[in-house]
Amino acid sequence: MKMKKKVSIIFWILIILFLAIQIYPVIWLFMASVKPSTELAVAPFALPKKATFDNYLSIFREGSIFRYMLNSLKITVISVLLIVFLSSTAGFALSKFKFRAAHPIYRFFTFGIMIPVQITLIPLFCFYSKMHLLNSAFSLILPQVGFALPLSVMMFYSFYDFVPNELIEAAIMDGCSTYKMFTSIVFPLAKNTVITVASMQSIFIWNDFIFGNTFISDNKAKTVALGLRDYVGAFGNVNWGMTFAAIAVTILPPMILYFALNKYVTAGMTLGSVKG
Image (cartoon, rainbow, N blue to C red; front, side):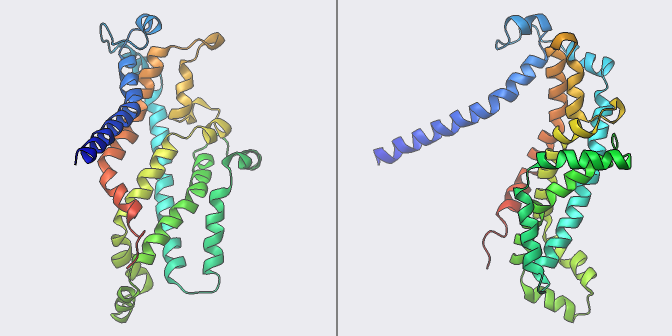
């Protein structure tokens, strides 16, 4: 009994230690964002002697953070809508429609997970350049949707395998068309999977840097991740106070989204893992 109690105490100590390691960078970021630049340079890891919101006022007054956030929001919303629509319909067709090419097509989608993003940058840049699509929202939406589809299709495919075929057969016998059966019966059942895919991909797209850095050079089309470079001055000098304040502002939307939908994300990741 004493041995079990000791093991339990050690377990909780490890959990608390792990949480502290995970949470500390976020807490430090917000503390650093309310420090004056002089204090941040002298004692970056100490508690702020006098908290100030001048850094936040500066980024809203002098920077273009709102425009960058609006650009990121537009790209994220359009991309997520396309990802959910395409992956949910493709996953349903591959899971429930019995045709000869179903498994090869599904394997084709899963193969996409192994393709590194980096090897597509030069071909995409050349294509966008010839089509005059650089510095446009489309140049970011297309690769975001393409690289998100393999994992998203797999998640929907796994869920649809969990849905009994008898339910679909009963709907068809009652006179439902394929489209009505999907939109009225099957898709609403996939709520947790939809939220999981949408929230996970939203965070990835919101934080994307590699596509934006490759295809966007116009300040008006910059996203949040690119906009953070505005605080790097001549000779690499960085205004760290404004930088940390900008980072704190830009990470709030994905943090709020994740914590608000965490329950559904956890359910969506596990639903369909056990069939029957």
